[in-house]
Length: 546
Picture (cartoon, rainbow, N blue to C red):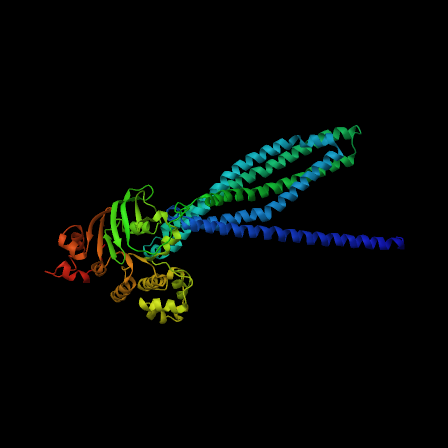
């Protein structure tokens, strides 16, 4: 090799490595940009879904299990992310390769290229049939994943009950059935792919046969060279590779399309409970709450409330009693505007609550439920949920007033004690005292206690009764009552039966009438009272009203 050629060779070698390095940098940059874009888009999509879920009303959550919604937020969005970050770059690359091969084949020999693409309609038909079959299976798969997640979430949440009643074998069978259905839908997809790839190979083999037939005839008469025929064979084989890649990515895109239908279907749901466009001005609670001929039914069910009407004056404590299913919880759900009545209206100071901004309406309420929900985090953070700007001293003061401070200080870390999921390490009474502290910290105008004084021991009952007295001082309170001591202190008792108001009045008045409320007390306490005792005298020490 002439010595003068060495610099040129060195430059070529340097250029070669420069091209390799540039290709590496370009590919890495493309991967980073595409993935950053995809992850950012999915992050924003998850935030949109979460905001939409927060805006939806209680009726929506009544019909959709938590596990199914988790599938939307996590699994379905992950399927979209895979299509965006992995599928789109590959598709662009494969389409460019296909376009380049087609252009090159027509440039080399147009008549032979036309013979090659005689099989192209067959490939399109195979792809169309494949896409229809796979789309059905992927929709099934996404639905069955959601069902599996919903069952798993429910089973894990209720594991104590499952174990207590020995339901493990039945739950295993149910899980196995759901799991098998998910497998079957996935196998449907696998079956479609198992037919598709051999069909594409057959179409490719048919194209090669046409090339060899027409190309061989022209080669025999000198119409084309052996090199041209070889190039056509090699490029035709190369043409099938991106088609197979596209089919594999089509798998990803079909999963993403099925997921997208479900995700954007969720985003398209509009909340039923919305603030009016021009809400009534927010004013302090001044006079009364009034239920006016209210009728309400849950979807697909009979009337839960029938022509309910009553008034709660400012500063009153009103107790609502009745058997299970009488409509007690429904009344307070309507007052919070978790649902709207089908007939009648509910007013605060004469203003229909549907004319109020939801934030204004709910901002004046505080709820203490029987099943207190505590979030992961410290006790202090859980008290602050009611009022985010609450100082630590204010939170401690609220806890002291409702007798929660003593048990909180007894914990290893006091107010900084971390709470497990749903407050699993706290007793029912402790959780209710925390709920009282949370409600007091909010300083509500209207206090709602939904069966908040049941399922507790005698000592905790004493603490809660005193806390309740302090909590309701100077406030309007609506209590779904279980303990007769709470009922006796109420300014008014509303007795419900089958969704109707049967009686209203004070404890003594209703007992004197010897009507529905008297009968309710008699049935509840007849075994608890000593011989000759009266309901009026001894009911305060008796068990809970149903």
